Length: 176
Image 1 (cartoon, helix red, strand yellow):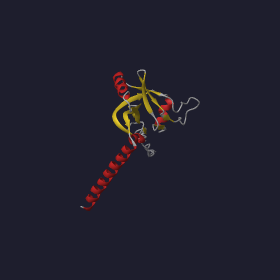
Image 2 (cartoon, helix red, strand yellow; image 1 turned 135 degrees about the vertical axis):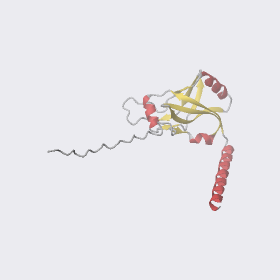
Image 3 (cartoon, one colour; image 1 turned 180 degrees about the vertical axis):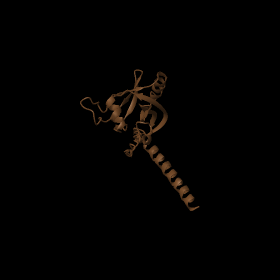
Image 4 (cartoon, rainbow, N blue to C red; image 1 turned 120 degrees about the vertical axis):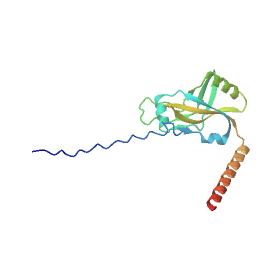
């Protein structure tokens, strides 16, 4: 007697799990939205950060906040102060301090330029965003000048006028 072969079922193909958009660099890990409201940006620089392992994992989880953070250049090195990186959810006893001072990694030429610009009265270093590039956390720093109250109102008026003009153009396209 010949036996018939049992029908074989192919194993369902596993789809690759989509990569986290923050970790892949498609989306920023943290953005300082209030910085553009409070400061004029004159120049921007990209810097690396010296972080601990739990800090990197915490940034991937989206627990970073740059709202009150600022940078300083001191003794030939740059530092990031008051940047809040929350505790990693799966860390045990070896967690990190949330608002510790973190060293910024810059080339010596960039450090000299920053030091010269920050010495000018009224200019400061403000972190605008944290993001991943090739698996490393990067911080975008802006050399900024503080806005006065009337500057903020003027910026808001311009923004409002731009919105109204774009709405008018969109409305005319819908009609015609």
